Length: 246
Image (cartoon, rainbow, N blue to C red; front, side, top):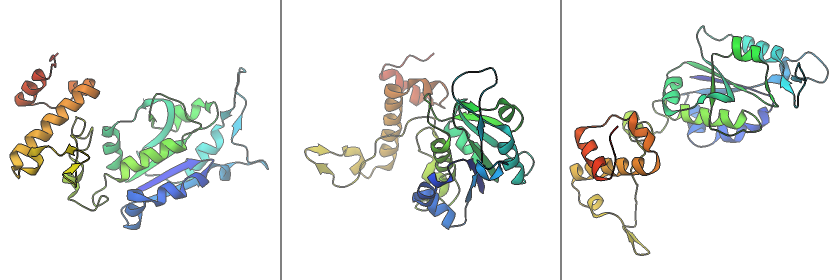
């Protein structure tokens, strides 16, 4: 998989792209992340990437020429997603990460300043994504989030378990928040691991985990239940917890 990141701050990326799962995925040859300096596609001595907004107003707006030329230089395959990272984008969800992870090439455009010329958004970007309802100084941190979410889904990236098994119970992948996790010691400062996890009864463990995922989702993100795939047993458990099935 090839990921291209277009930014005016390429120096922000080496550390996060070289560490953890993202770094290991690249070392293993599962993916290559290329960071492109947008200033290399400017045509003036000051390497200007922004200008004052037409019609007046505060701040500066990223110019279209460098962004168009940067993307054109990549020779992307037809239909490859070009993602503009912007607070005005659709919320970035696990389903988006799974969709993008299935692509051979993904390009991420990092906005800055007051915004990006709308011609970039309308004619160059194929979609807009936002990582949350807040405003960052630029799209670079958002790009790091998206890259991490995508690359960890690549087969072999997690390394410690079969691919499907490793991610199947992730929060949001299953449609629910993940169940509580415990490890050694079994008792710590008077806090004990639930007995069922020590029982060796795999069926009981799986049911406990499912019920805890349901409980946690109901308590913390109840809106997720509307889209989750729920069995009759799940619904029965949720009703015991006070859920009212719409």
